[in-house]
Length: 294
Ligand SMILES: Nc1ncnc2c1ncn2[C@@H]1O[C@H](COP(=O)(O)OP(=O)(O)O)[C@@H](O)[C@H]1O
Ligand SMILES: [Mg+2]
Image (cartoon, rainbow, N blue to C red):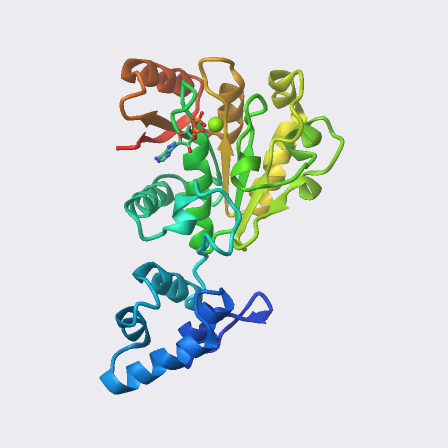
C-alpha cells in the first residue's frame, strides 16, 4: 500500500499522514477491507500506484482519491458521506474545483493586501448593497479556505436580521453574537467549533434581536472584536445588505476593512461603487472586490 513513512504529531495526536490511503478510505466507508485487498493484488500485478489500480477496478473515483490524499496530508476536506454541513461549502467538499481555485486566489490576495501586511490587521467585513449577492456564501467559503491553510479562523455572523451561517454550518441553538452584545454570555462561550474543520470557528448570530443596529453600536461589539483579533489569525464578518440598514457600516467601521461582493447579472455596478465609496469616506479600507458567480 502507499504507506507514507513520515509520522508527524500535531494537536496532540498522530495525524492522517501516518495512515495509508487504503486505511483512510476504509475508515470513511468508501472501501471495504476486501476491496483494498483486490486493489493491492492489482497494484502488484500491474506495478501501478494504489489510486490508479483502484480506478482501473472502478472501485474509486478521482474525487475519492483526492479526498484521501487531502486527509493524508492533513488538509481539511469534507466528504458528503461523512459530513452533514451544507454543500454550499464548496471549498470544503470540492477544494480542487474552479470555485476552490478562485477562492484560494482571493485568499492569497487578501493575505498580501490586508492580513499579511500588519499583525494587527486581522478582521475583515464582507459587504454588499443588496441581498443575494453572495456575502454569506463567500464569507463561509473564504473562512474555510483560510482554515485549510492552517490559520485559526473565526467567522462572525453579524447579520442579525437574516442570518444564514448557522444553517450553512448546521449549528444548533446558540446564544451567538446577539447574546454576546446584550452581555448575556461571553464571546468565548458563544463561539462554536466546526466538525471536520479543526482550524475553523463560528460565532453565529444567535436569537434575532429587535434592535440589531443599536446592539452593534454598543461597546460590547468592539470588545467582542478585540477578543476575536486577540485569539484568532483571521476574523471574517458576514454582514446584512447595505441597502436595508446601516449595520454593515457600523461593522466595517469597527473592523477597519471591508471586501465588496458583487454578483454577475445581479449587482448594479454604479450602486456597488457608490456603496464602496461611502464606506471609504467613513475611513474603512476597501481591501478588494469580488465578482461572484463569474
Ligand atoms: N458562487 C456561488 N455559487 C453557487 N451558489 C452561490 C454562489 N454565491 C451565492 N450563491 C447562493 O446564492 C444564494 C444567495 O447568496 P448569499 O450568500 O446568501 O447572499 P447574501 O448573503 O449576499 O444575501 C445562496 O443560496 C447561496 O448559496
Ligand atoms: Mg447573507
